[in-house]
Length: 478
Ligand code: NDP
Image 1: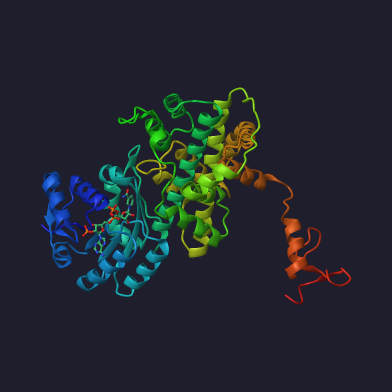
Image 2: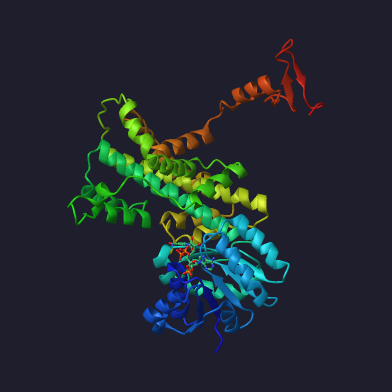
């Protein structure tokens, strides 16, 4: 019997996705550039379902039913192009090439256009959930043509995570939309992890709670509106003791956070789209600063903190929890706003309620909050910003006093809280009647004749700063 799907690239993600397909009753043809990984997979798990072992891409393709579905799970970047180049001559019109790796959405747009010219479908699929998710059910974000989704979607839905029985997989939109949404998911993940880190730092450095005590706090927080996978694993990490030293693991790990690039891509894309994603950006920069170990070593010697003595406000731990919730909400709001702007820029029809719904299980940012976010965007009147949805504007307003106290306390104590504070600035920026941007427009007009608009008259204006400082209409000249 020919296989319903072929998987090439059998490192952790590819092997686990292949197993997931097989465990769900599909016949899976498997291939890896070096045969060792294929053998290792089949030796350890060959009895989990119907696998067809293949040694070349030709053999892989020959073993597939038509239209062929070939899933690439190879290293993102050049390897994807290399495998596509080898694969394309072997395929027939209507076949579907699927890239399940963390590819950049612009690469996916380019590849989709190139394969469409050969009447082949190219589907960029965002897969979240890590190694375990790939095996047990990830959150899946497929882009590409709707036609390809008809042939592929049911299989992806079957292997995806389920939230109350609903698959965490739905067609996102054309070409690179799936990879774009996965990228933003990762950006939100960066921010989510950073705000948890800031909460930990405050509880440790300001409130003096040891990791073991904090493990209990996070376990309790996981029963509140913060309930999420990341809060759950934070409790686990904080409760873990290093076998060698007997110290909390978090105290023996080097405090420099790594990154593979999707957070950076999110910020670059946000800058290009002009969407203020300050929480996500600060979280990427915070990882960057943590990795500047040489500068940090000098900074510890030469930079004075002049911190203040601060008596912690009563209920500080609960304040931190509320600040964490509010900042997290802002990061989601910014990420979702970015999706809206990208939809306009790239001609995608992104349904934010559906996207929130498929993040509810399987992926790293899965959280109770996402069910409410889904409902907010499913409402007849969609909010222009998540924070404007009545349920969220109320929830964040309730957290604001605590949020201000926490940021003020952190600043006075010299504890950096870049996402807590920038998220609060974003919130205040959205609600202020007048922003200092008016002054910036004045400055721009003075040094560069960039013109400005007035609040009381239509049109574009320029003050003749180097002349008699009278104002002229700039509409004729610009
Ligand atoms: P890696 O990213 O480590 O890639 C290794 C695989 O790519 C191997 O099968 C390797 O083959 C193959 N490969 C590399 N270069 C080539 C090439 N030029 N031609 C053919 N095959 C090549 O594997 P992962 O399983 O970690 O990840 C796969 C994809 O999934 C990546 O895009 C990753 O970013 C993404 N992803 C990973 C997650 C994770 O938690 N690891 C989570 C979500 C997505 P060989 O064995 O012969 O070297």
